[in-house]
Length: 161
Image 1: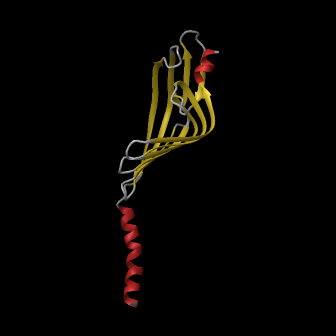
Image 2 (image 1 turned 30 degrees about the horizontal axis):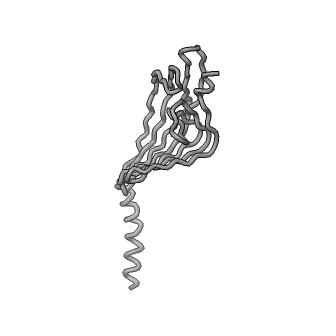
Image 3 (image 1 turned 120 degrees about the vertical axis):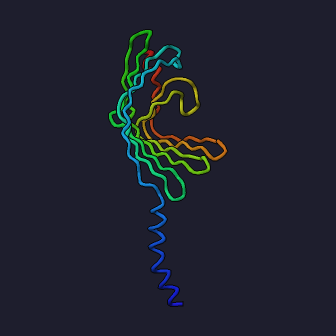
């Protein structure tokens, strides 16, 4: 019995290290963003120009779960009402952490400021900014849930004023 305990004590640390060794090392990417498009979800045409650099750090663990952290420091969105010329600029830095499971389910935990092309609370069309914390999850069969704290800014209302 004593010998079994010694063997277990000697092999357990190795098995823990070996299981970690099968997980991929993190990948770090810096992705420049310069997107411009016209959106009409406000009821009028809005030119949206997003710029900055996404910092993406991702890895897959030994169980096959993808972990992905993304931040958009210096990320901004310049929006112009094409009817009136009114322009606003918003910070869309995030960050967020994605967890994608082998069964297809995933969770996104977002903090800070995020741009949305519909109201995240009810799906109504428009352009919105969240400021705070949210958790968006989709289970393996496609059912989604969103919980959110903080502020919701109606960017269409700001552009229309």
